[in-house]
Image 1 (tube, rainbow, N blue to C red):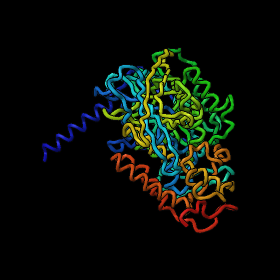
Image 2 (cartoon, rainbow, N blue to C red; image 1 turned 180 degrees about the horizontal axis):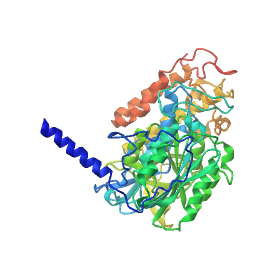
Image 3 (spheres, helix red, strand yellow; image 1 turned 180 degrees about the vertical axis):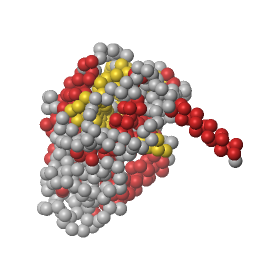
Image 4 (tube, rainbow, N blue to C red; image 1 turned 90 degrees about the horizontal axis):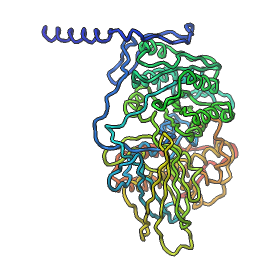
Length: 596
């Protein structure tokens, strides 16, 4: 026992010695923000995968390089998850329409991209086709998946050095608990049963510290804070010349206060780049953390989203990170259409730290810009695009995608590695024709590339080229059903029901519509949050039962356990409290009468 005791003592002394090792003599504590009256409790602990580490511990600033020889994949920018959709349901609220997106849901899964042979280029598109008769609408449908492949070996992938400015919301709304709404659109404070004891500010602080642990000594870091004003907290300086421990403690000590001025915070963040010279070896990126409840005015020039678009043209890209269940996905979805932009949602600092261990280098490294796919003839037209923020720009014979980021590949499939295109066939065309697909894109240096391939539609009533396109269609069906349910539920919540007298078969078809084609889509209040309690009518429960049966049948064919994520949400909705009274003024108790 004594030998074991002394061995443990020696190990602990060695660790303490390493932890107390002096930093580079040039390292400075360049923190400028002074708010000691609201910044206390500097001994807060930071949770990590190894347990709680007190603030005196040094911050690791390197990460091991991967050694596998498999290639990376690619995925579109924009949403990287749909966590907020599920979180709102779990907390008893009706989610916002864009809290679930096709690209965000695709990024939850790995897809067989249908690549034949080896990719040796930056980007190698691959194509798969499918035909089916939709079980809900009864319509014949044609699909084309675009597989997003890269020839870059995972072990060879290196991100650029970073000029990173972290812009942090420290306004009063950040003091609320993670799963509590701060206000609705008419100014009422909405409280929910607390399950997460930490405030959004605490989770944001811990998430920033976890993020900074992935920076290297030759990266530069700056920090801006904002409430009703904006404050330069730390100028851009090389990480290796910064007192990491001091900066870490300053961040963990941040407290929320004041109002909210998103555009002031972003403007101050952009200013930090003025102090450095332009260098192609660096990726210029702002990471903007907020509980994101800005209004439509922030899209104007000189406001948050207008400035982010302008910054993109100057080579400064933005990652939005949303904190809390009141995170306004609608507006962040708008900005995610900007070149080089993406967004994530944080639901706990521990889970976010795990995500960063896998994703950080990828989330800050766009690889492909201005992707454009063009159909060669008029035999088919693009009816819908699933899996790209630029879907509204993809009509007729052209599909557009602003940005592709690197993504994980497990050797057989790529995380989020597809875009699904629904085609409409010319009714006068006597038989299925082959398509020629031409793709053009640019790398990060602006060099243009092109690729041309032929795709065949088989002479069968129903088929899938591979499991990848079948899975993409199933996941897109799930998103379509959820978004159309949200449109109908939001319409009832806002007393704008226009479909009361429609027949059941019309409603069943409508649930599979491409959401912008829903008749009430233009009426949905997408820019301001109004807190609506979760309600699932008995009619929609019947629809969810039918969809669940179809979904499980497809799961069995695909033999893919990852699809249980969507099934769990369907079950959450089916288990919700049955609506027993006319909750919404002038709205029917049951918005779908099929099966009664």
